Image (cartoon, rainbow, N blue to C red; front, side, top):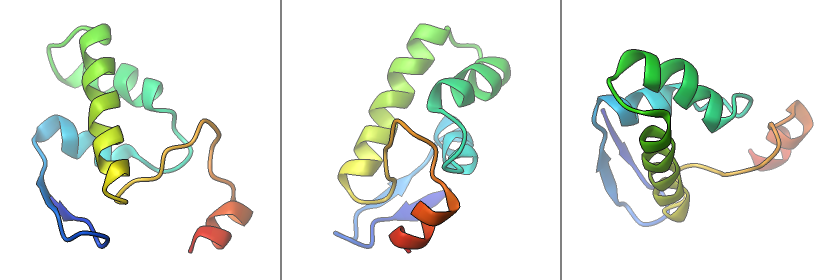
Length: 83
């Protein structure tokens, strides 16, 4: 999968793990849950390593304006303000 930043036109080619994270990033599911229920069950990786790598991945996407990070789920009202 490839995604592009609308902010700076940076292209990202996602590997299988990145694709799983991207597809699961629904604004409701915490990254820790995505790692535990999707990454660690589908790929041979320890929870610690998967968590570190996932955190770096989403931080990089957020830095390019592709993904928004939050410690709270996105509500319908919040999603309307973002759009």
